[in-house]
Image 1 (cartoon, one colour):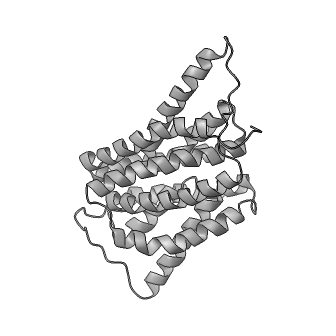
Image 2 (cartoon, one colour):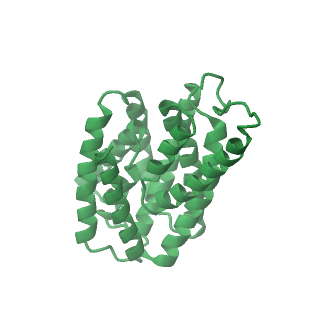
Image 3 (tube, helix red, strand yellow):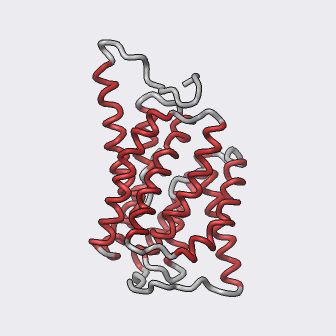
Length: 268
């Protein structure tokens, strides 16, 4: 894609191309529906959407940037659904937002400081450990609606941890949802409310990333909005499934998602 920001990367339609131009947005919307559902429950939906964006003709750098449009819209849908049900512990969101956003700025700035392959291998190892932690750790009881933010040294550690997650999100982002759930659930929040904190924070991260990518001219709005249409409704569906199915179901889905994500990274 070499044109101005917002111009679609697909070729001008001809008689032979018309079916492809009709079905590509529908395919992207369907993929967004699946990815949005997965992202609001656990994470890793970009494993589906990024390869698909490249498959339909976007350069890898443009696909990585364009995917953030759908993540943002999906996060908006999930945040609305969690808020409607009164499940978001806003004190945690307000606490984590400033250090995390600072981390995003530095992470985006230093995105080329490490090789992708080496980093993905490390990430896969961490995710396998995370899956083991979820399998063996008893789930936090549902009903602790007002889990206080720790004081003292643990509070400072949490600020550093949120900064680190923001740094990673600006750097690569893939799998950051799993890391958020591990951090938050280890501090007393059940998995559903951990998701309810994770979603608005990632929404804020992604809004910043979209602005930066837009200034860089790396967004394909046609593909991004097609993907986002499905992701918005998928995210809302994911929140509904969490509320209906309960924490044990979320825990099982999360464990499977982590394992599949780690395998995908190791076999790239």
